Length: 131
Image 1 (cartoon, rainbow, N blue to C red):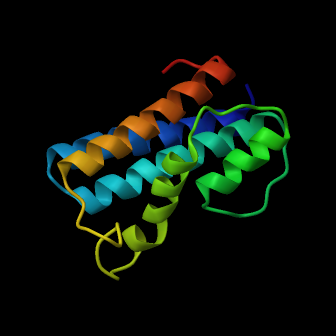
Image 2: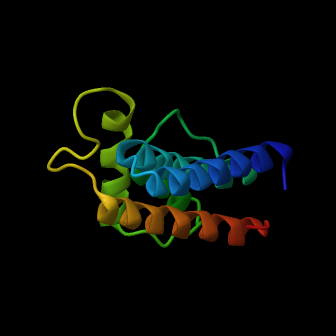
């Protein structure tokens, strides 16, 4: 595995671990921000490892599409991508809740954590890295 890939995986793991701590602390918006960041960094790790060019983006849907175009299948539904994509901007800036239609809660954070963990595990399996 490339050194740069290892770095991206390390950062993704830290985001995942942070999301868990934040959820336990009932800090829902930052939990969701870390959920999104874990997924984004894990997918970018795959792109980097396989030397696939990509433009700067935070869109999980776009990253999945680039991977799929390069015959790297990521088992991630459109609904899951849309959920993660809906988190990015609102979690970084004080424009209200992370989720536009309702306030995040423990159930939404658990769902986000489940999706992000799934993505992280898929990527680690493809890269044969330790989880």
